[in-house]
Image 1: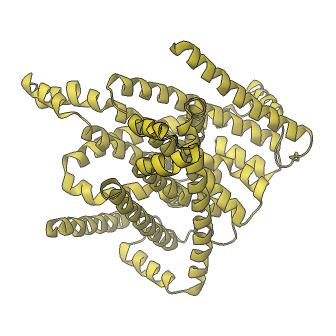
Image 2: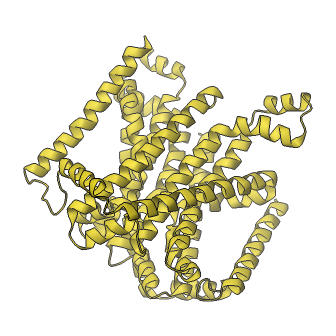
Image 3: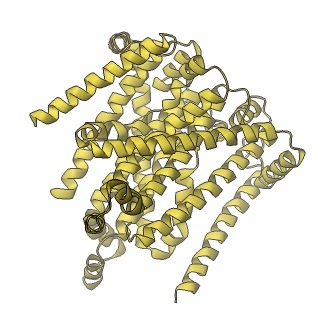
Length: 245
Length: 255
């Protein structure tokens, strides 16, 4: 445990050293120094305007995540339970997952205008497909003996889904949620970059326009920390479901 | 027994896609979706055909294509070596796992302005952007692939007394191949996102720049034509790589 903690410290130290070297090599117009960036991040966290933007982003991100998860699981359960529908939809879902959704920004803007609905829509189109795909595969990979048990007990489709399929498929569905939530955050932020008047993405695009290098790096650093924290907690829940559930 | 099922699935899929486009076409024609928002799909196809026939955006198309190929190659090759290196040093890899999985939650292309300062407005900044966005997918999948080499396969290599290089080329890489192809597929997809995002923000040419420019000028015909081109291109490349990936997975009996 202590050696693992030491690894983290060493990694962080190495990362900071690399960052400082890069700063010296390319100059402050391209990469600000780690200390200046961390100080700026701390200063940003001390202002109420910044927290207003954080709030706007979190609201959109939370709503988009809920829609992605609910929609993705519903779609995935349905496609997983009905073999034929799943076979028909499989490559379509794969294609929708892989197309660069950022290219759709003009369409989303034209449909939803500037504001929170465009951000949420962006988040959802990023997050819903991976969750649907993971859920579908999770349901399909449930051991056949469970399905047969449900048949023998003459459970209805709804009861089968709720009491047999969902718990058995839970770990993989959670893995899908982890991937989907990360992409939902990406989508929400992209939406804010191109289509918003508030939020972290909006602060970022403003920093990009004025070439505020320290701001860009400070905000990105904060985003990375947030994303890594969300990811790690979802990973913990997933591990619990795999071993304890 | 199998064939009719497959063709039935294929027919249903085609019918579904055709129906979606038919409904979209109808909604546009009936003005339920107005023309400012979306032009009918048939007009998108016509616009794309006109663009390709006139050749007026050929420069942009080849500019983007070249950048994507360069970025994807960079991301794949560098990502493979970094991934293999990380796999060899678990103590370095372990603490990096949460960071690597958080990578795609952050729009890395916000670094693009910094790259412009470093490389100037042009190809290099875009290619570096695309490679930066694609590389992590390749790193992660390379480490996963090397994780999944079955011990029995490794032992067979040892019994045959292969030296390290041969064991790598003849045994471990083929066994890791399905994940490596997944890595390539994702690296290409993410490189496209990085480059197109960069072209949206600032570029001298490219498909992304053309789409952003026509959006700003309310030129929906051009915008949807170029969008269609980009989407078709991505789907074809992704479809080809997915088919290859599926074949490898089947051959190696992994999922």
